[in-house]
Length: 390
Image (cartoon, rainbow, N blue to C red; front, side, top):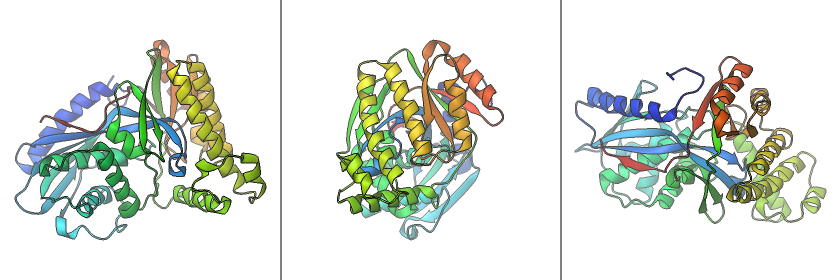
């Protein structure tokens, strides 16, 4: 289907956008790129707000990606343009600016270069053109996709040995310390080490990743409500801070470490109890979901997704009317095992597990039932950051 239809096949769009990216680079900079780097967005099947509590998550790297076309310069100037926003920036590597001085897309490439420089990487100037099929602000981690794609391309330019785990750590540092979003490690890890056809069971304390194959009968559908949010300055950082303060109050390193939920809740103020309940129970649900996926028990996995959404709505309080309405529409359709909000919440997208044989009908019915502004993306699990030959 064409752009703007309710269901957009990602693979076809990726091919079109890659060709457009190369042409746009030549038009703007007067030469061809020497490489194109790519990194995926992600959808988290389950594990809402557990990553920064050092718990478990179960994301999927998407086949909707951010690409960065690059070519080196002989000076230390960086010129970056975006195909999607029709915007551009230019700066010297030695004048990246202090952290948290910008709140737009420009902060992310600056932050990546800042983190690389602090890690001792010898940088050089370059020209870059960015294009993305990851909807921004939708809870699909467009920021991590941009960070990892740019870092992968810069690493190739300066011949920095590529270590996906180290790169994920540096990109997370850029987002936390430079941009000012107190994120956990999930998004960057998923963008760095995603595997086609698999979900990733991530232990966010150990930073260990276990690929779990997705059954052939399961389709993953991202349902976009069309609503958007920004994490910087939102309630996201407030939730994280509340969790950190509560863990300290309970005498544990992180809420992951709460063993006796009843005892922990007894001594807490009423406003903190729902947060702790969600994190502890969601961590258990995520571990159970990985086990269900391994044994192919999609019905059990769907039930866990439904329970996760209820907890995110009622306990963690990060849902919104648009997200609740989309979840209800999805779960009313035949062939849907379960659905929940994905990402940080407040706005954006829902993820649904759907029987593969009815996925097109499911997507069209759900979007029609939700109404104006909605889109559905039938996605496939993709690989992590890499280089595409230009």
